[in-house]
Every structure is written in structure tokens, then in C-alpha cells.
Length: 375
Image 1 (cartoon, rainbow, N blue to C red):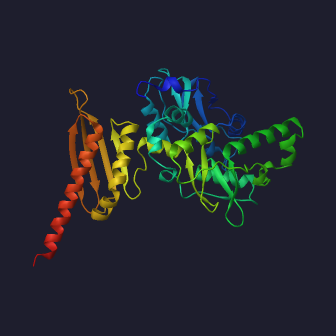
Image 2 (cartoon, helix red, strand yellow):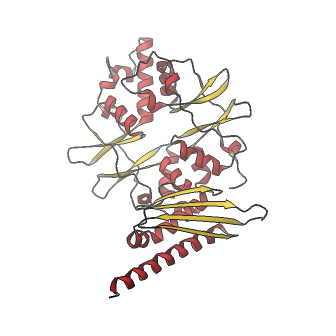
């Protein structure tokens, strides 16, 4: 994968908007195209990105210009690596980034879909299950909720899919943000043309006040906590879904798995349950996965023995020595521990650093016990 760069996977036909557009016009474009991220240009040069969630607050004056909503998001270059795209998407927290040339002109856009489609055959997705990345706190809808409430919950929580449950909290459907967007665009078009098409007729005077069941998806993909990530990703990519509801054995929703959470896995974020792990330096997504594996294997010991709750790992290339790296590991808990190792293989450096950390913790624990029983 190392030889593939951003230019190979980016979409070259990009929808962008000028910074003089109104919020209402921008929403109309995003609804009709079904896209949540719009590069914003000024005099044909990129200045930022407009995020759909930022536009749907009820407190906004839709006649105002988009200027105050423009995010200064990270950009990519055509020659950037896939690792760079993964980290850029992870750090930005949005699903697509503009690709610009040396003159800051938008030449493409790369989404989480593009990256994950490229990496779907990676062995890493066979090593983890949905439960490893599932979001356990998520909003739900009731069958009596309106489309307006669904849009509000999606915006506040920045999620693209919402489960719909009945009075017994069992899943009866789900709604995707893309469905809401298409519905809004269709209803708006129907009102403007004066036609009473199928969607606009249902909308009556206020389409957002209609029941969410009007656009609900009744058949959900069968995604459970125990299936591996490759299968979940295949389902999501084939349906071009940003995420999917995870169903428990009792047909109740137990989580949400998203393309964003998969990218965070590849980018090294949220790699521990009790331990916050931060990665920096010259690492790639494969290294991040190995870091997650090492933390996962040792987390119980690290947390219970020394209350380690934060680990920082910095990997850097040693200048003048081909293929050699230095790894600095800092662990914080009851005490602060610093480990430094260097060598040729990044994977071996991880193992060596964590072995040394465990040895230090074990030594500290034995020393504490000795002092405790000494009269």
C-alpha cells in the first residue's frame, strides 16, 4: 500500500462553493447532492470546508452568508501518502478532505469511503471485531419522532445513522442522514415547482414535521458485536453507508459502528479502554494497529498494577541510518515511566518498549511489597 498515494484514490469531480453563498443555498446544494462536506473557495482558491452538521442549527439565519461556518480543515496534496490521508481524516473529525495543488486550487477530494475501500483487504480488519470499535453511547429515535428531531439529533451527536425503536426498545428500523437530505431536497424541489410529487405530497406544509417512519429503512443489515470488521466494512461499503446500527441478540440496539471509528482504529486513536494512548512521529497505520494490539494484551496489568491511564508513543527515524528508528514511550499513572529503545524493526521496538515497561512496573511492585513487610 505504500506506493499508492492520494492522487490514485481521490474523486476529481468536486462540488465546491464560493464563500459568498448563503447558508440556505449551501444546504440546498448539499441536500441535492447528498454530501456533507463542501470545499469553500475564494477567487478560485481553497479557504476551508463547510460541514453539513454546522448548517442545520435552528438558531441560524439561513439568509446569512456561510462565512462564519467555514472550518479551517486539513488539506491533502495529490502526492501525499495514504497514511497521511488517514491521519488527516482522523484529526479533522470529518469524512472528506479537499486535495489542493501548489496554488491552493481544489483538484480533488478524498473521503473515508475512498480510503477504506482501498484498505478493505488489509489483514487488520480480520483481527478485530465490531465490539472493538462500536460506539456504545448513541442517540435513538422513537416511532413517533419527527424528521426534524432526527436531523437535530444527527447534528448534535454528529452521527449519520439513528436506530428507531418501539415501546419495548426493540429496533424497528433506522434512518440515515443521507435519506433525510434527499427527502429535504425532494420536498424543497416539489414546493418550488408547485408540483405535488410523491415526497412533496407527504410533506404537506412542513416536511420536517412528518413522522420519521416516512423515510425509515425497515430492513437493517445484520451487524452484530461478534462479527469481524471486514464483514461489517463490506456491508457498509456496498451500501455506501457511513455507519450501521449494531443489533444485540434481543433485537435491541447495542451500538453504532462508523467509518469514522474504523479510521480512528487505523490512525491509532482510542486504542485502549482504560488507557489513553497518543501516537506521534513517523508512524503509519500498520504501526498504530500493532500499538493497539500491544496495549490490548497488557492493558489489564498496566492499569491494575500501576494505574497507568496515559501512554505516549513517539517514533522517529534516526537520521543517517537507513531503516533505523528510535521509540520513546512515556507512561503515566501512580508514577511516570520513560522508556527509550532503538532498532530496525518498528514492531520489535513496540514489544521491547512494553516489555521494559512491564519489567519496571513488576520491579516497583516487588519493591513496594518488600518495604511493606519490612519491620
